Image (tube, rainbow, N blue to C red; front, side):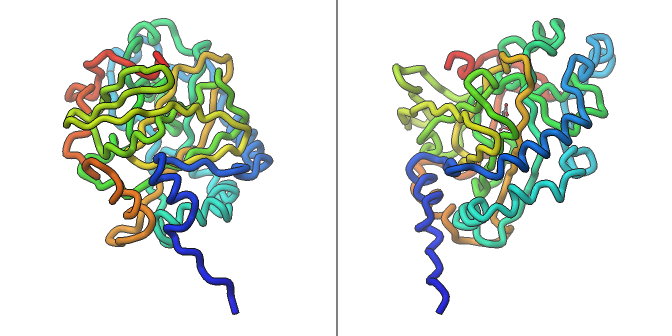
Length: 309
Ligand SMILES: O=C(O)CCC(=O)C(=O)O
């Protein structure tokens, strides 16, 4: 007789999501495979000042939309077979299945680069100083927009990119090399998922060991700040309403990570995510997710909490 199937809601990932809004994988994924993928990526791309447009080139035709990886413009498309160390890792598959069902779908996968201060041109640093979202895609030369480049991003929910969509998806993050406190690690706010979807930029006030987070609807939660640091192959995943962000990369080297958005198959109900979502005290979807951009997509709000973390 085969062993009894474990109930999805009994998987530790579901308990962690209910309690704190995220789950860290003990031991991560295969560090050797992460290192091999990293070497192949570095053989294709040099992360230096040549990534960027000149100020005159940018000003001649500023574009803020269509500057991130998309089908046909995604470096990871060349590495489909090399991603089995993540996508077929038994612990990842079991944990994601417990939340989203066995037939879960990868909505998006891409490489994210935390850009080191040493390669960002001075004109660009001056322009973006204090912006809450420093996704540098607009300033990167067109052929290099197959990776997302961040110079820090304020605390946000991944729901931010999915107006009107229910929080039926999770984010999985894998570090391809060791990431310490100075390599632009992710800062994650434990328990912040509990307020459901809230408008970006978020209402956060620093406390002795974390942040008071208010939802603008009268609700608030005290959150602890967890720095996601770890060795190559480090793997963590979080709920679409869990606040997280990064500071600008102060080190000399870029930080390279894999970012997956993974969703329940359309039309499916059930799975651990419904149990998690039933425990939230706030909306599961928003008809507006952010108020920091103008119609072209340029920043109009200069404010940043994570840089004070
Ligand atoms: O990797 C980073 O610097 C930030 C990534 C992030 O927060 C995101 O992609 O949602």
